[in-house]
Image (cartoon, rainbow, N blue to C red):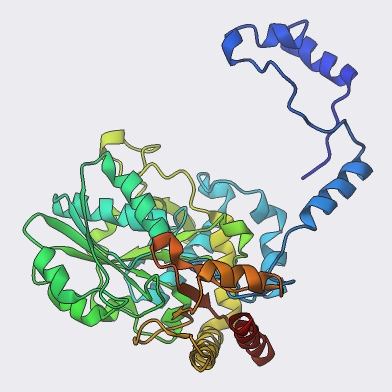
Length: 446
């Protein structure tokens, strides 16, 4: 962010240019009751040097994952990002580009989005992808609205094992539309397909299942396919894109719509935002898709060209006909994902996913050997798993923070006081994993 000073003289010039004599005259139309009556309590004005030092003092208090041994996850993960990713997305033509509306002057941006869509289709096995969503949670909510438009039904069955943040966003997105949300409770860390079947009726528009789910466990998506598609309901899968490098593509279990959080693909953790969601689907649902879609065509000279297509947003068509009012496709975040996937390639993604899985299973086995600790569930998992703790997870997290370890996510927020959700990525060395195990043992013995 640039340092921009405003002197009294500069303020006078601006007020004069606006056509008022004072700041009070500028805000004369704002009622008194809405005006600030006291000072904000800000520090005195500083020079650029002084403010730079002050900001560094403040930001130095942050405990980033380069300083701490972090096992945080629950939707936002600490994967390695090659330096070239930041270098490329920092180029001015990408960093400052907001919108690809004018196709004749934004061919580079449009091509990057087209490549992103193609990669998401390769990863998921689906026919078509849009240009990106705000985040994984809103992508899931948009998929439900999409299913309601397609089926003209207004009941969504949702696995109780999806991320709690997704549940909150889905509730906000759907309550004004009148969609009934039915949650299937977890049974030993997963949902039972029979419970889904019993909840379905002729009013069901879709079923939403996350795998790996919030506890880190894989759901039985092939059985879900059988149960869901006995009716005309749509199957919506929420997936971790990194897991798709080594697990079945959603198309293999006949998902109708695939969504997920794309942060793991070359994007930093950024205090859990900004993020980006991905959404891919079957071709016969293309006109129900929200957001932007970039298509490939030819110009008047027969040369390859790119343009926005199927623009069913309220900025382009009548609001009551629009599929979405999403105003951004998170272009810079999806560009980072595109660069990341291009650099790693198929074999690189497989290597990342394999290392995540191998290291997560090693850590889970070592923790399970400690007195009082055990795996909470006996299900296959990918890079994240849940353990039962002999003490409150809140206490364990606080004690490990003293040792510069971010121990994971305390599941007391969903009513599980003695459960800890632990994520492991390819960045972890054996020394990092062993240090975590030793710290858990010391805290438990202490």
